[in-house]
Image (cartoon, rainbow, N blue to C red):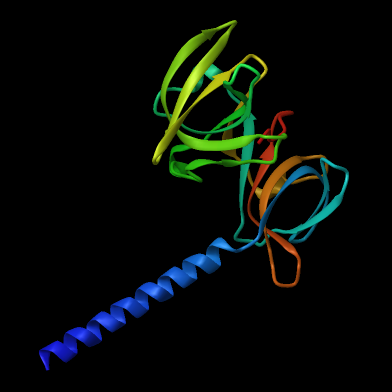
Length: 208
C-alpha cells in the first residue's frame, strides 16, 4: 500500500512538472515586437503611431497598462549598484560602445536581467543588470561593468551616449507628437497590445 501510494504521488509530481514546463514553453513562444515612433492620435484605448520607419502602427493599450516617462539623466548620477539597461554596439577596437543607458527605478530592479540581441541598430545588444564598477576610460569616456545572473559585460559610455531614467507619467501625457517606445504582444486576432508604454518627456525621445 505504501509503495503504491509513493508511486502515485511521484506520478502526480511528474505530471505537475510536465504541465509547468509546457505552460512556460507556451509563454516563451508569445510573439513580441518593439515599436518606436511618435503618437499621431489617440482613440480611446487605441494608439495610432507613426513608427521610425514611417509605417502606421495601431496599438491596443488596455486600462491596466502602465505608463512611464523617460527623461534625461546625468552620467554622474549612475552609481555603482544602479540597475540599468544599456544598448551597445561592437566598436572597431573590440569594446562594446554604449548607444544609450537607461536607469531603472528601484521597484523595477531585475527587469529583463541578462544580455540579448536588440534591434535598435545593426549588431546591437541589450544588457540589463547592476553596475558593479565604473572607471574613467579617457577622452571623457567611462567604462561600466554591468553584472547580471551568470555573466557580466564591460561597456564604454562616451559623450555621445544618451543617458536617461524613468519618471512618473500618466495616460493624460499621451498626446499627438509624443515620442514613444513599446514592447508589444501579438493577439490571436493579429492586433498588437502593449502592457507598458514609455513616453518621452521634456524633449527626450525614449532612446532604447
